[in-house]
Structure formats: structure tokens, C-alpha cells
Length: 120
Image (cartoon, rainbow, N blue to C red; front, side):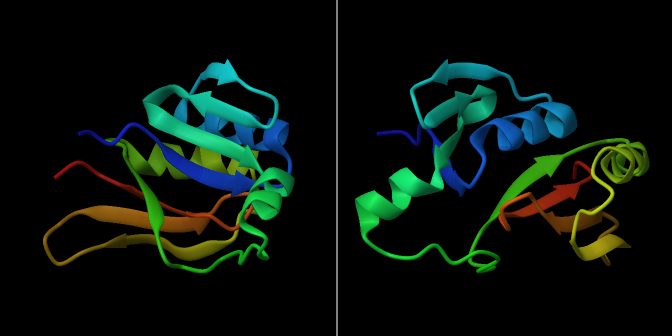
């Protein structure tokens, strides 16, 4: 068995697709009417579909998980993030851990937590 995808719930699937394309270079693999599979296995699902399927409310910014990306030139990434999405909400701006890794954490357009760190 192997993990195939990670699904996140989004309010505006087109805006979210563009967000992940702009910042992380993820391209559309399949558009299945409210479900989009992007490269690297990220799936965006329209919030209405998810709510209907679960019968429960969506809890944004629940801080229960995060998407983790690595970027060698993290300073350039943060500059691109702030230019492209100036209203992004940070959990922490650029910090350096005691082991030397630089990281930043922020929420995507729908409150999904993202961490970007330098490779270890």
C-alpha cells in the first residue's frame, strides 16, 4: 500500500489552484468537477462537496496538520509570497531552528497551514 494523495478543503477552487501554482509550481493533473488533483499529489476539494459528504462544518485554521514544502532560497520565496499574496496570515515569519534549518509558517487562502523550510 502507498499514500497517493493529500486532500485539502477550499472555498474557491480556482483561486486555490492559482495560489498553489503561483507559489509552489503545482500544475493541474485532473479537474473532476469540484475536485482537482495537482502535481505532487495535492488534491483540492470544493468545501460544499466536503461538507455534504461529511455532514459537518469545516474548521478553518484548526492547526491539526500542515503541508510541508522545501525551498533552498527561502528568502526569495518569502519575497514572492509577500508580493503575490500580501494579505497572507503568518503563524511565524522566517525563523532559524537550533539545528540550522530556516522555516516559515503561514495559512493558505482557506486556513490550511503551510510550512516552507530549507532542505536539511
